[in-house]
Length: 304
Picture 1: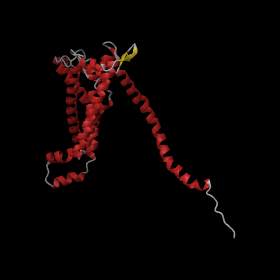
Picture 2: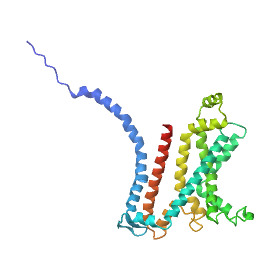
Picture 3: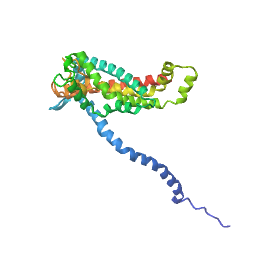
Picture 4: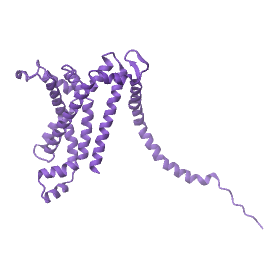
């Protein structure tokens, strides 16, 4: 009797399976290769500075002396007890609310005006959008020349555009609305053009007028675009610095001092204390995160 032995499996038999695994792994490696530069950029220029600011916020860190050891939570208590902290918080909140309401309301009106094609649509869209191409610092200097008594073409009116707290606030709001209304108009216009014409046709067949169509059709379907504009506007207003630094320097009598200006003052004036500036920066970051989360939750809740 002849016995036939079955040869053991060699490593060569696993070749097709190994090749299949390698082919499945290749797209993942390609994706990581594409994402690596962005991840490295974020780690160097975003994560690392935040960690450094967090370390500075709990340290006695001077602009010229460097780190002199931990002092938590002294920086945070010093910031809250500072005499200009709560006035700066109140003014920043007031400025944010006023700017967001006026800016988004005007931007929505502009988007509705240029939504439908007409003879003047191209001209109006271009006119509304042109100020957005100008840098905020350049726009601030332009409006400073308009408001200055020496160079203002409105000097004959005898109006002090920046001389009182109320006038300084509304003069700055006018600058921001002029500069950013076209940008938010563009975002809302994209949302309006994404609404199907069939929806409006169905509303007309149901007997809905212009007001009812706007309230029950346009606004609900435009909610995502409005939420995006609101988040951008609130974030930008809470971080306002350039316009007030160039127009008012926080005056008159610190009445237009914002939170970011206060951070700047802590860092480069008033003792050159980077630790207090970092502590206030952490507080502003936390406030922004809370505000954005609440806005996202509100949007999701309405959609649900």
